[in-house]
Image (cartoon, rainbow, N blue to C red; front, side, top):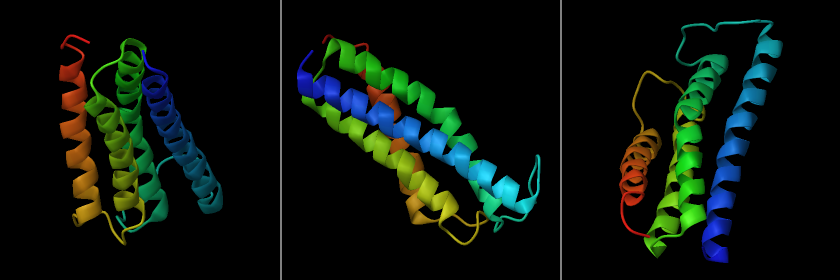
Length: 134
């Protein structure tokens, strides 16, 4: 394993962790501000609703991406894999921006689309790459 490869793996994993736990904290703050112990309004413009969706979506994808990143970092791989890890991490941040920063969740937006598509494409590529010789 090269030092740069391991560093990319760890940096991307840390970035996903910061995103997940940062969103969890943001949901808690929004719940406190709204005086809601659980649940949220169904209004797709409600900030608590958007934060809950962003956190849930991140919780669905970030853990397995982190496993992929660490597996690749431990064994080493082609240079494109490091770029794919960075790209997948960026896509996770894009989808959160597309969910939270846009006025409403009821309409698609290009940032959310690119984040989702990039997550799927790069996640599949990283999964397949584990089956290839190092």
